[in-house]
Length: 636
Image (cartoon, rainbow, N blue to C red; front, side, top):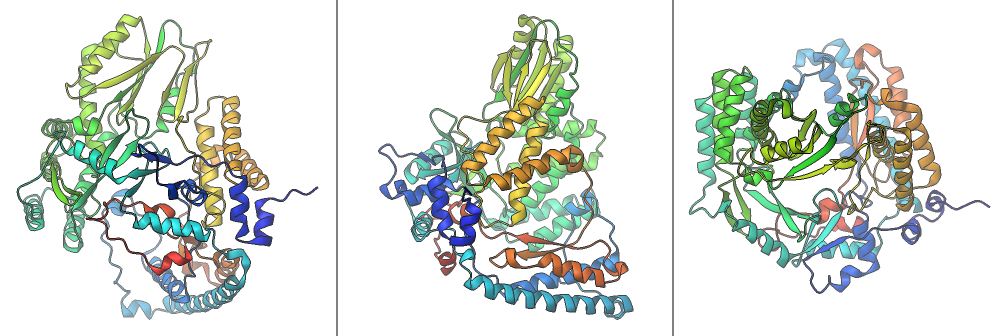
């Protein structure tokens, strides 16, 4: 007998697929924080549970994009194609991409546009535009009448979404450590925020003026104009002149793994006055960070280090992990600036540039103003999470302490010691007394830093790995998952581009392969991943094709260099899955001389607003958050 899968039901019943999947789907609970007597009754309804369990990355079915938006997207593609023909396909280096000053209004000179090759390219692009627009209109007419493209949210779920946006008693936040969505009582959230405001790291200034902040930035740029690279200085001045600055916002992510639950403080400073300067600092500090032996540049690099221990480890071997409690808030700013300044000079950074970086650090860290619950605050101690220079600065400060510690311990240093921000991992060979001496020295590196250590001769959890020591003395590792992980993967009926579902699943499978030292560990983690995806509603046929492709691909395909292609970026709406964009683009490319366009252009999609972007806000209701219920929610 043929088994009906969601794909079959989708083709036949359209929006009824949502109810079919909901009845067959195991949904992990959403976390409720700050409700001693339980959450409100309307949040415990099946519609609310289904909506929140879909996760923050779920995309409701959007409205039709419209021919106008498609035309605007094509005009950008056409302009980019002409610029590539004029300037060539030479890729930019990291420095040029980071500090490139955009000029979207610049057009090719008239004498260049009158050249034969540009006139021919314009003619070919005009034909392509007409073909795409006419194809889109036919697809839009089909999509507006087809049952296949109905909403993927029920009316009850859309009412719940509007209620969550308009509620002044609730705050929606993702949990710390990526443990799912949290529905938080506004009373608990504000009380926790004021508790942190009273902790001693923040104060309410007697006066605050955005004009004074801009004046400080102007003074810095004028004083250090000769010390900063010309391209970087031009970018900083452009950001100063064109930026629409506003006060940063303080918010918190619930630490569900702590008892009692606390908030992780973050200052959202994307539009703050000193954010471009902080990005400039982060660029230079990250280059210095690459020279530090104890620092992991990424979570994947620990696997490379573990692979170097191919021989069995004999004698007393201990696996040690340590976590620094509240590292950012406990780092003294003045000491961190001095330590990093001296490190820059030791890394052959010019004295003029090192002086400019330290002056910029003082400006950014001593003028960290933000708003919370309608009031303005300034951080007086510690480093603010949210400013771009915070992670590399914290890493470098601890790296300087570790260099001094390594020089003092000499032979008592671990066989392997690596740290990623505030989490460290060590392999220690020797008696337990020497290990205790090392842990005591690590604890005494700085009086403000408190390390919580875990020591084992069997297995420890570090980042997303479980690292173990086998009976034969060989190291092994596998994927580690936290007990509170909600596994809120993107559901199959989320309105993402089709390639997204395959892409993120393949990425996760590649991570499983990379983080598994044995084939048995890889198969076990892949099987668990497969079962979770089935519970989220993915069909067995679809998953089998993706898993089979990953097995045949191997790592070498994932590491292959990607060609520098050009893409026509279009909004992803209901017409996308029936729009033969590949055929139209391929037919057009075959008719164009290769000298005009180079490599074959592709088509990429820009996804619509996610559920998280609709209900998760940094600002608080009602003082700082103006709720706007637009008609666009009707087609959510």
